[in-house]
Length: 144
Length: 138
Image (tube, rainbow over all chains, first blue to last red; front, side, top):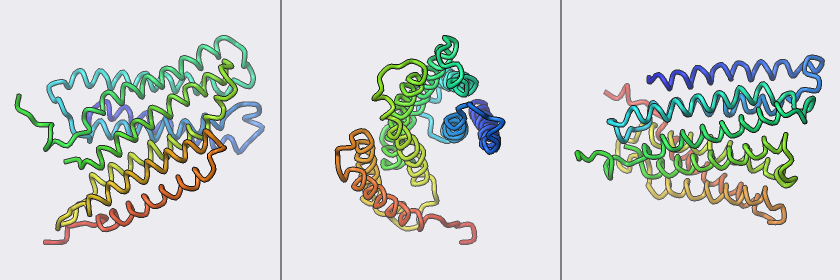
């Protein structure tokens, strides 16, 4: 299992635990009063857990087109890992406080940066994985 | 070898991931910077594309590729059935997304969900025969 896959899956497991913990805490309204936790819970599960698990496994299992370009691919994958995770962390520490400090510029910058980082991560992942979706019989294994 | 149906299902799933995250990006920014009130109307499309377009379709494409193949031809079931799954699922999902964006398009949601239902029933029939083990064959 490649290193990047392990990082994606381990990070996913952490978000899975955090997401379920948040769902548990949400059962006690006195602890979470005024905080916007529902979108955090959903995105921890869908982006943090399921999507990171899919990305990790697909990087590992999907056929490679250019084995000689492994280094370039791993740079894309690492960039996708860090942009996604920094984006998610920024989101999860900022979004709950939107109802409380909506107009503060730090929240605006943090949320905007988080949204853009997550978008960039997905684009980088798509650039990495798209060429690997191929029927090898037709075009993958040329000796040239 | 990845079959063409899986390639197209996974490519389509990637496109839906990009579309869904793009809408999610705009919606998240709208929470702190008022870009346009219409942006909140994109929320349902964001969910539908993430769950059905990305997660469900990627799982279907990967399962169609990786599950044990049958011992006799056609080894993944009839090819046309695989294409029918891809066609019905994506046409249905496009109709569903249109219905969430434009409430005035009547019956689009019902048609969309109907097509998705048909595609998943065909997919289930195709996969049912491949949920096997050949370990005890010899």
